[in-house]
Image (cartoon, rainbow, N blue to C red; front, side, top):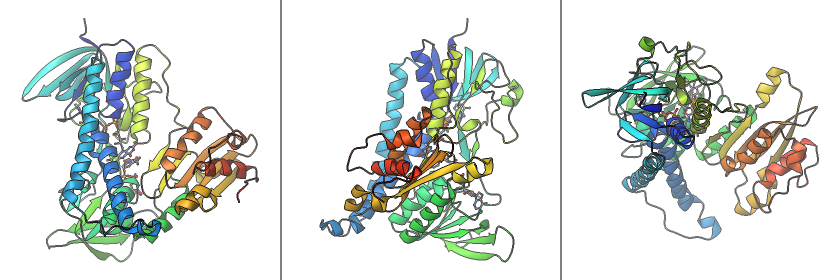
Length: 466
Ligand code: FAD
Ligand code: NAI
């Protein structure tokens, strides 16, 4: 008799959510976690700490630069970085405790240690030099991802840092050089820029935020440049000399050519993340990986080994916490004999900068490439009443609809609170809704979300306020 119905390895948003759902469905569940705290990358060194610092640094920036114009006169704010880091830590602790509570509430056993799969139905858990073998009917691998490294550039998490070190710097760097204009580079670059660093971002491609709608990315770059970001696009960092007091980075054009040297106090390497499968014993157990080192799964999250499933960052797809969570729910339901599934066409993405950038569905570039005929409706926040009175008018909403059926295929927003506004588009798209459906849905006034309705009206060339 197996001790458990399900053992989940890893307690990030994929793993702990899967455990909760499985328990709700009547399974006896255990999670295995090698870190001292539960919650994975997201809660400990990812989504949550970065959002705490983004919030705190935005308040600092606002107090210094936006209050006076509204007639709120305060003296120039002073940064107390240890207190800001403490604010961040309190947020992490609160959320981690929340996951511990959820495990208890749902009667999920927490096994502290490193999990290794011995074969179908067997997980070995190592901790403090001891090991125990757990018997289980099913196993879910939810071991997440790790930072991608640059050859020849060693991350010491002090001067050459990954996102983890960049979330815990003990002073504001005079000059921060960021390698990679992706989500981490722009979010953490924003944090340190607001706190006083000079920020230069070196990006291999000729644009920022690859994968996001090109028009949105262009406007976003212009806004970030106005905020003081400097971009070196089409370039790569090939070496960092750490011998002196300041770092000297060698930058080469991506297409080849003369190198230049840039000095920096801190270099942040954020060029993507890679699946994490170290120590899991996958090869010996017979769990196949794909050519990119991700655990290979079928459409029902099943790996090549019977009774073993995988979800989250360790499998293909966007490396996002909510994607991992939804897969966690779906796989628990599938194991319970239900029809769990994830709609990969409707997974929102948000960059939590100021302004925020959010997106769901297809970009204009993707539709062009697929040869889909589409109509575009756009509405700028300069024409939105609420944005005008708040004097936060940067950005616009863009809706892409099928030219024949009017079905919404993609929504892209750049603007304050864009990350909250995207969800009405997600619901609409889940129901296969049209731009007309959205345009005829009453939106509260005065809200920024009225710009979403206006963009939907603009698909039919009948926006009211433009
Ligand atoms: P993880 O969260 O990585 O969790 C995996 C867990 O497995 C870890 O706790 C690890 O210790 C454990 N583990 C690994 N191997 C073993 C083993 N053999 N035995 C036991 N335990 C093991 N996503 C968003 O959607 N929104 C954001 O705002 C966002 N911000 C981010 C900011 C940063 C700086 C970073 C780095 C990432 C961010 N992400 C964000 C991405 C998000 O963190 C990941 O997509 C998400 O955490 C993936 O969840 P997961 O459950 O697959 O894996
Ligand atoms: P990313 O994939 O978003 O961006 C990496 C960038 O680095 C790309 O623009 C790429 O072209 C560039 N690059 C790659 N190699 C390079 C090189 N040698 N020199 C210069 N540039 C190079 O990855 P990032 O920012 O590291 O984030 C990792 C993951 O974490 C992402 O997949 C993202 O999904 C997730 N994340 C999500 C957040 C959110 O949802 N708000 C926040 C932070 C991270």
